Image (tube, rainbow over the protein chains, first blue to last red):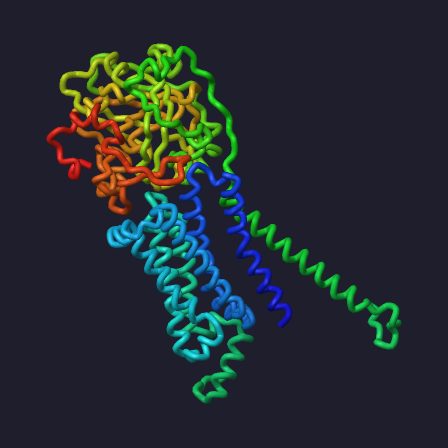
Length: 219
Length: 324
């Protein structure tokens, strides 16, 4: 238990490293010729990165047969939300200087901003219901269903990135590909768990199923 | 390995609890610091602070902007560091911050420019001979990129009309086509399909002959650096920056409208004319305002980038929303 707490702390500190360097570079005028654009790009990429990391937890835990990895999922997802909020702030602040009318016009007119904004809004209920009390209040099943929105938000984020580049779609496609693998794993895992999970974890899962008496399979 | 039974271990050999805890704290602190350094290193691979690069050679005998005052703006010039480290030159990289270092060994000597097509006196010009042929002039122009940022750049160059006059266009010549070098050995992105290489651009002949249109060989008093289009590039200040084709090897006059790379890549977003126009949005973003590099707020974008008085007549009777 102590170790999990320490590892969580390690992730927490490391998640702030990019933001710290971004802020330091900004303070020392080392973000290049267009610091606003750079800050927007960097926070956007970090948002996608943390969303993908949070979505990688379940496949990693099942494939490696290490259930304790699930403990890090919430924090990674919340950092995705955190960087997403910063990303939105850079747009509202630097690009639109808090002019609400210009923002509304932009959202209505530009599909990529609409997609990005929607994806961020989808993350809001997930962030709100991320604490244990909310999970208990909603009940595990409903909570799980709600949090499938994370798939939609991440896909929206990847599409948002793809739509805004001028010609070089390689990096957005890389994110989309990684997301495709993570979501594809979930589909495979649903139908062919024997190939997608480590025996240890599968045996444990099966034991639980047998205990509920809803599995006819033999080991 | 000798395994001691508990009774074999003298109490003096047992690590003191406080020492044990502080040692563990130390190990954890070290592990934490190591991961943070690792993360910082990874971040730096993607976001290294921009670095200084080499400088060009001094250009002598330049007719100053003051002497050709009507052509130049008196707005504050963008810093040389920004002009040389924020570049769209897709042959090298699609990352504007990375072009300078990727292009630093680009070979620009010897360099010739072939001028031909519908002309009476076609020829191949050596870049150094060309630079001696015409008096270099300083032109401080606004530069507006289609992406929504802008600069003020003190170019050095000469009117494109000079070289066109020399080769004598035929009466049926209506357009001018330009071509950039596409050398896979020197330009890392030539191997990709990001754009259709070589980069090509075009102007209508009257646009090409306009006194504001120049071929640039330098900026800030020195020869161009590779990232800015060395050794010779086009500057058309009332059009979006991508019309200003870089590192030109070929100029060709013809009767029909030539292809243009961005127009080929996406004709609904990039037209042949690509005049700066705040009233015609890019399908994916507004062109109403621009981020002047070095400033913090946004500026209103001006029709024809503020050169409407000089160039609007070129497009009289044309619907600029159709011919964007």
